[in-house]
Image (cartoon, rainbow, N blue to C red; front, side, top):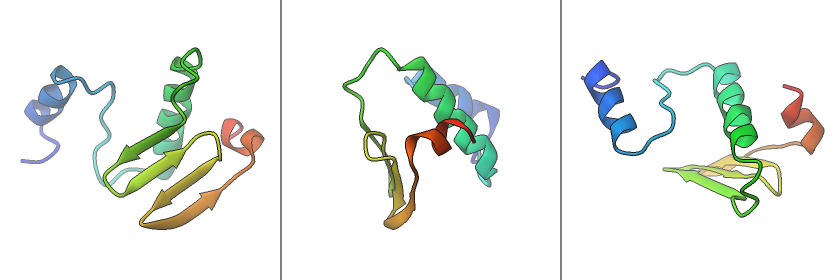
Length: 80
């Protein structure tokens, strides 16, 4: 079964730092992204994340999934 406790534990044990079940809430996703960015502030080499068809370009403040979805100035990302 997808999103079962054993699947979540397996993902975390295999190196995942977080796990988000589907269907997810947009606010929760954005909060998790902000949290990940706060936790990785010292690592300025991370500017782009890819998760399947989802891509986050931190330096350009662009979120896309197969096509462009959102482009926001830095202050709106941190104030969500």
